[in-house]
Picture 1 (cartoon, rainbow, N blue to C red):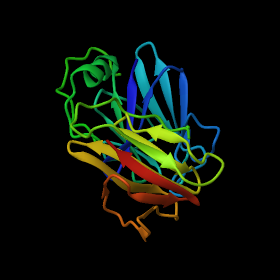
Picture 2 (picture 1 turned 90 degrees about the vertical axis):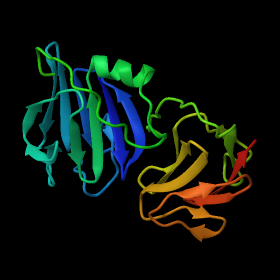
Picture 3 (picture 1 turned 120 degrees about the vertical axis):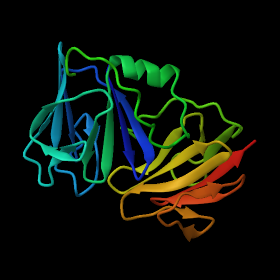
Amino acid sequence: MPKLIVSIDGVVIKELQLTKERTALGRRPYNDIVIDNLAISGEHAVLHMHHSGVEVEDLDSTNGTYVNGKAVQRQWLHGGDVIELGKYKIRFLDENEAEDYAKTMVFKPGMVPPPLPPRNRTTPVTAPIAHANNPTTDGGNACIRVLSGAAVGREVPLTKVVTTIGKPGIAVAAITRRQHGYVLAHVEGPDTPTHNGMHIGIEPVPLHHGDLLELAGTEMQFLQN
């Protein structure tokens, strides 16, 4: 199946296989891909999957839909094309490239994968957030332990490239597994996470065993073996 890789500021936050004839993107919670950002319209764009390929259609959004930097109304997609909605970038992978991405792609965990080599083509082609595949790293086993709220005591294993935490629409952060450990980054919402009592900025913050985190009123602790 074709696949979408969603990123913001170079950090992969979602990964989704296209399995439906119509996949909606927008800010409203009923969309298939929800991007809770004021730059995104409630019903921003839609992907149409046909036997001959996939095309993207802008739904008269306020800020427009772009493919490879050019504004489009409706356009066929080729493997490796990048759809831009506000600050969000969505890499489209056709079926062959999606398989290559899953099996053979090697890239810095948590970062946007580089373009795949061009192929000969005869036809153009929710927390509700999906995650990328596990990388091979030396980061060790790690988890987040919830210290407050209804889920106090719960531990969330960090087994994916990207694990999102927080509340969509209020505050969302991402914990990304990299070659030599984990980093915390703010994804969306006015409420930035705190790291050992200090609000983080725009740059990812390295995490160490025992660090205390707080986001959207929930206290957590980063634990690593």
